[in-house]
Image (cartoon, rainbow, N blue to C red; front, side, top):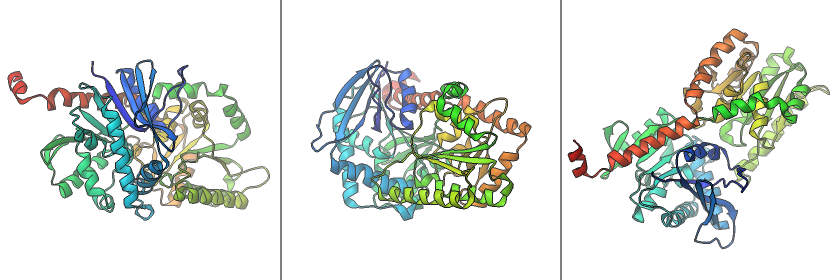
Length: 473
């Protein structure tokens, strides 16, 4: 059986007792792939050191070997904080005004991908299947091909792929587009993302469409398809059903008394629309004064990428907005917004989702947004809440029964909050049931299985020698 090699920016190495170390939502997603394969997980250790070793540290845990490398301060500054998160991330999320490109950062990004490729190539076996994850590693397949690797290599892009005019504003866009076609299979979240990338390759790289999502670029064939990522439905549902045993959940529900709960859970990132959402909640209370004291909004927003200046400014802006709204609308017995910057484990989040009458998921742009799916799955089948969802989140394509809104229009969001709070039970059930059924069918296992089956199919069909294919016919 083929071995699976997964490559990501960060690696979540479990402790010896089997307890996983959290490294973002990606860890939850890719671990499902290892249930069917023995494999290797390669990437950055999360450690920054002055003199990182050229050889990865190898750690064996059950069926998976973890191979991690450290970064130097310069590598981290240029590759991660610089090009990946100050140039690629804003461009991918349509935020051209926030993009900060520098040649030195791009050189660092290229250098780290080259370093990763050299370290990884020593560990790859001829029959391995390689699955690379996310925007930090766009050039990795090209680097591996340059070292002579002929393995099937797939890539999954967890964030949006923008329209050609937006992506091409990045000075390095042409080089990245030429590099990405060295992947045999490119997975994106939505059909819109697929169309954006295909059009860009056709227009700028003279790609020839071959049908079925396949393109030929300079004699190399690649396939681009949508694989919308799912969640661990069974695990999250079980966590929600058991959440009342959790002290934080019990105390939060008791503190609400008879108040209805609005909830938002996001990393602190400008793509998530947290300040804009707070303005919408402020508009809701302004136009519905009878709801003051009867509704509480909890916003859970762990800090992220604090070394990036734009995120430091965002943290200040959000704190000022919370203080302004609570100061103008609150009273000694009621605080409109409870703003929490610590991260909570899944059992707590599942219980808070279940307790919330309204889930607010209003990013300005998002590849998928798994919080929307978690909120839906966590709901009680007897009395579900209502999801208010940005139409610019990838999840909107799979959850059309949610109240879809334009996050740039705070009055529209405010009206959706009101509609959700007053929605009768029969309508809430009618909206919730098809969403939870769809999420159950299209869970994280379905996502990983479909992507890898497509990549395996490439191994057995696309890469078959012409003579063997002719004999098979």
